[in-house]
Length: 164
Image (cartoon, rainbow, N blue to C red; front, side):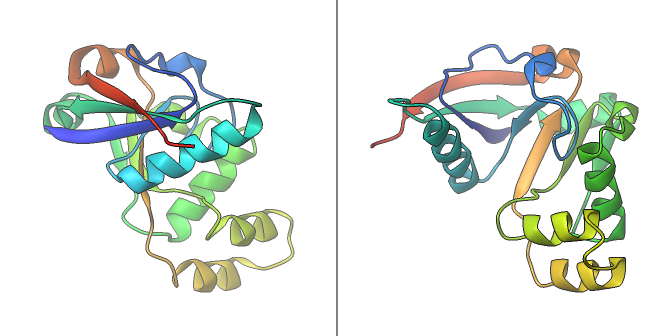
């Protein structure tokens, strides 16, 4: 079992994969991470959007090995050409993520998002983008795209409110 976290402004005891926003890094799904600090960052970002909102971290046990053995799984090991093209396709509305049930890999976060956006805008070429991305170690995220994965293998443990 792998402990994973979801940062939000809502308690999420029973995640629904179809509720997520379109055009995110790995498509429309339920995002978790095994990096608690990353979940706290997500919760802080989301709480900044809403007046008087408090960040909430939901904790889960994920039977990851069984899930990836049973379902279609994709893992991006690093910020590389394949990752960059996948992120750009997803952010441009392409549904390349539909080929998978679970996707794991680096977050297009504040450390690398300028590079991704500059590449998307044509301000830098692919080789320059890859050179800039290579300087960063990815923070991990897992996107669950199939509700059956959540129902079978993701177990809610608890939640905590972040301190103001």
